[in-house]
View 1: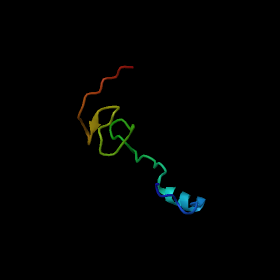
View 2: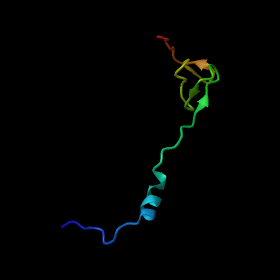
View 3: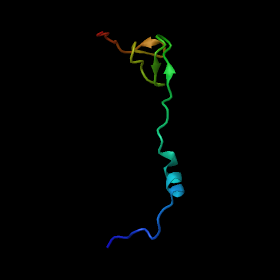
View 4: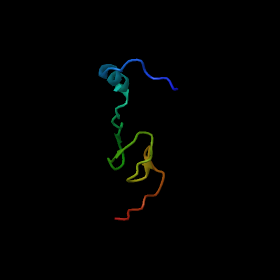
Length: 62
């Protein structure tokens, strides 16, 4: 037989354990070229610029 818990875990103890499971908001910064929201230390997906210079060429298929 597999081991079973001896006592029911209370809601407070259960919820305290799950206190760190919530999703955190993304830390977004603005692009210096087009002012679009982007993740820090990444190439801007809107214009393809990183640290003031164009790294990739972005095609606008709108």
